Every structure is written in structure tokens, then in C-alpha cells.
Length: 280
Image (cartoon, rainbow, N blue to C red):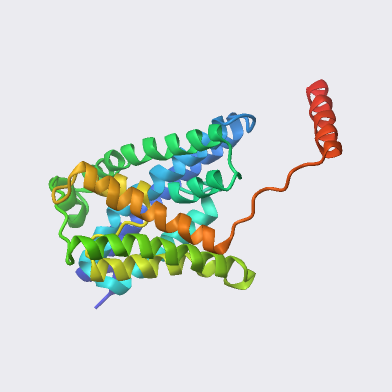
């Protein structure tokens, strides 16, 4: 049967169109931001992080279409490719608070930038569901999968394991992912495998636990407010646990603090800044 007319592939076409639209709008927003917003201060940083977070969290909503229709291998490939695309287009936006906390703890990020990035991520996570449902509603006349999602406002979390195992998966998973990322970064030829390593963990957690997290921002966008877990338990499981695991991995890796500048370097930097102001 012709692939284009085979109903088996219709959900895939819907998902591909959804992802293309979200990334396309995100890229247009980033181009406009780069053109009209100065890179001085934190305004551009905030907007890039906001756009990237909305984009990636909105895509997470569509992952359910892939998993429901094509299973574990498909969701593994889908998440890996989305993360790869995010790394290409996101202009350095991390869309995950764990690396931000790591940079701050190790003295590589100022408190002002921490608040800027974290606020952008939280705002982006808040608006992701609104964008997802907007797209589903607009495309529901053309996609049965999107029509089903647009009409389904329920969110119920079903865990396959006890609380202790779920907590262990979040802490150990974040810890292991941080170690694996460090190993891959140390080998330039393998850096492109990072999205696939993250996706492998998420797919494993989906299979074993049922509701994976790892990224507190994505978890907030997709899972906060769902039935099956209260607010305080959510913060412990999807914020505190992965951040603890990630920071523990960072300490094992031994991230280096920024080297202190000498008096001559500080003086030279001040001269360069003064010269830049005069040229303006």
C-alpha cells in the first residue's frame, strides 16, 4: 500500500507537521530576537532561553502521539532527534535547570544570570501547554490524533513501580546521565551521541517506571498538576531528586571553577571596556 495513503502513518505525519511548525516558529522568533534585541545585558539571553523552553516543552506534548502509535523504539528515536535539533537551533538555550544550578554552584554563573535563565525556563514551561493545545485545536479537523488530544483534558500519572524505585530512577538516572555526558564531551567524535544517551535513559525509565522526568523544567511543563501526585511530592520527585543526582554527577566529574584573573588581566579588561564605551 502507498505510504502516503496508509492510515498507519497518519499520526506520524501529524507529529512531523507539529514538530516542524513548532521549530519553525521558534527559529523565526530567534532570528527576530537576534536582530532587534541587544546582546548586552540579559535581555537576549532571557528571550533565547524562553523561546527554546517553549519550543522543546511544546514538542514533548506531541511525543505521546509517537509513543501511542509506534511504541518504545519510535519514542527513543523521536526524543533523540528532537534533542539533536534543539542543540542545533536553540542558540545555547539549555531548557533544563539542572545544568544551570551546576554552573552556579561551581561559580561559573552569576546570580543575575541564574535568575534570568531560570525565570525564562519557568515562564516557558507554563506556556507550553497553551501552545500545544492551540496547535491541536487548529489542526484537529485534519488529524484524528490531534482531535483526540484536543478533546482530552485529563492528565493522570500511572506509575509502574513503588515510590522508592521511582525516586531512585530520578536520582541515579540524572547522576548517570551527567557522567555519560562528561565522557562523551571529552571525546569530540562522540558528542553527537549525547541526545541519544539522554533519550535511552528516558525510554528505559518510561518502560520501567512509567513516568520519567530527569529534566525538572520539562516535567513541570508536562506533568505538574496531573492526577496521581500532589504538589509537594512532585517537587521532591521531579525537582529535588534529579538536581541532586545531577550535582552529584558533576562533583564526581570534578567541574573546574573559573580561574581567577590576575591584576594585569583585570586592568586590561577595564581598559577594553572603557575603549568600547568611547567607540559607542
